[in-house]
Length: 237
Image 1 (cartoon, helix red, strand yellow):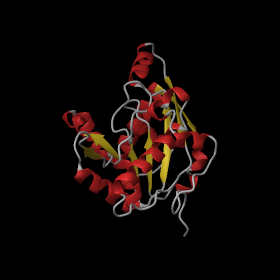
Image 2 (cartoon, one colour):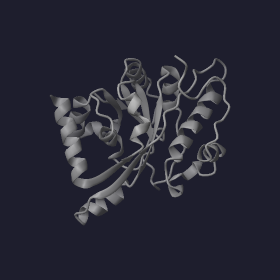
Image 3 (cartoon, helix red, strand yellow):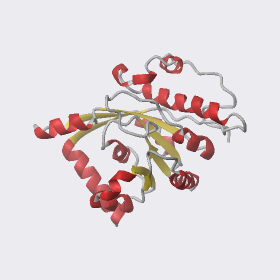
Image 4 (cartoon, helix red, strand yellow):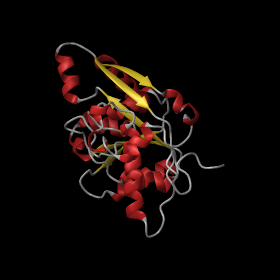
């Protein structure tokens, strides 16, 4: 009951303050009942809940910054949605363990690899937490690019009694191979760059930030498949 109420309130709030356009939903239709890791850029506070607009599931798991524990409303939402508190500034092994177990149990995990909201709107350097979870769990990674959800933009439109146009662009899923002993650090860097470039490819040029000139992004935009060990796409069944 609490979950349905929380989800109803989220959709009500989003409908009141934004006009959300979903592009590329066909890319995830085959994964609607499968475990997955959804990764996106992070512009504003609405970003995490936008996943409810294109995934109709009751097992969506979100990581919520520990600073919101002080706010009663956020505590209620976190409990109702069965979300996970995470310490953004320290290695939160407990939260990572819970997230990995949720993925292995077949749930969908929503993460922003940047770890915090971008103050400029453009991508900042991604952290390795999301790529670690993808490699350890073996679940498909669904890249998502969000445009128009910046807090300052949403608030400015609210003052004018306008709904903010937000575009959520969903990319094609990809898989990351397991980590190999002795190569973990290098692999995580490569995996994180892949993840962030997949997100960057879904964004307008001005949103691509530190990945704008990344060689891998240029390959993705040109439709070039990089010949990597094992497979970066769906593993053989």
